[in-house]
Length: 159
Image 1: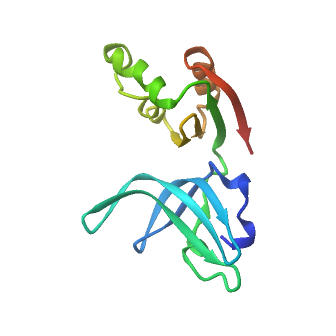
Image 2: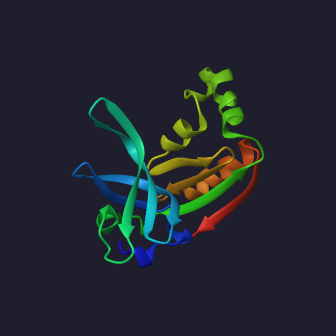
Image 3: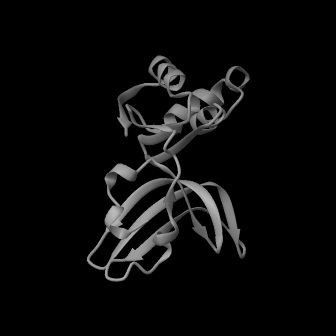
């Protein structure tokens, strides 16, 4: 991806990028554009190890004047996926209690696990009360379930 292609519209998109020389899949979580660089924060689909550390997210960057950096290896891969940004009326931590208090009913311990168990769907929390959800073909079912079961303020579809 070129530095000039980075904008707020790519937040929530599925992508592949480079992590320690390997191509990995992830979801774009945030962007930063400064005087000298453009950066894209990605949430990895699964944690990746480097040394004694596990990394769940990372930044791809590109220098503005010559495009040098890991950003040039980032590629959007979710043309078939639908994406929503959802703002909850309470913190996700509070919503997660619904699952832990009645584990026998839900079979999961948090909202992320519940949504990630929908085939082809992914939940990425971007702040205390906001998340990005992507799904290849289950978005209608997910949004209906969310509206019925979870207190949300706004569901915004991202193209």
